Image 1: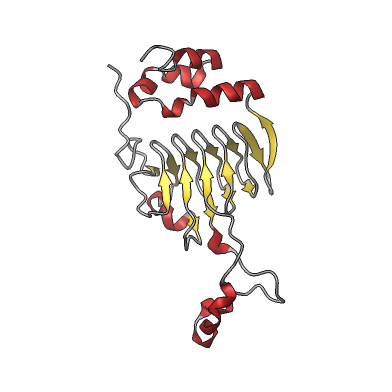
Image 2: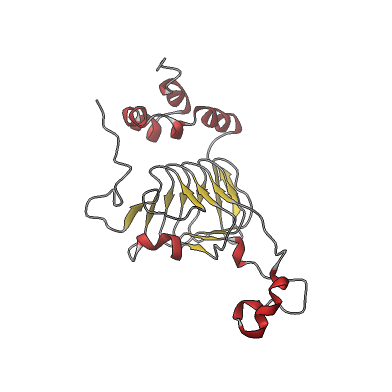
Length: 216
């Protein structure tokens, strides 16, 4: 019987300490990562929570789905990065301490776009940046160096600064079929048995391999 990859090991690729699975790595209750999503960094991938999730002072959450691939330098800017823009200065004086700290009320009510949510099977290119509160759909591809400031549809390819939609990976009809199949939610053993179909098959092949279609 095919054996799934071990989702509990920190470094899934033998001899490649630059690659880490995120689920067994993250400790923050404000970060949720699905199984098999990984981050690749030649420096210190284990510092993902502090080096790649920035200004995360809460309470918003970062949610990343299953089977996502994050290239080196992918960063998520959280709502704590926001500054006031309605006065003459954007400088956050109260955060500097001293008597300025008496004016913490000036930092309440800052713009907050809520949780940042990434679907499953999303590929992030090298150095991509995701702005606060963005939602990225399943199967999307984020180009290298992209700055994602707006929501990304399922199976869309986006690139640039600000990121713009280049094209969809599939027709609207096929996107709907792929979302209905949702292979990333299959049992790990079933995924393992159909890796070749998931990676190189057609949408019809994937539908035929789905557990319900096979009566399992």
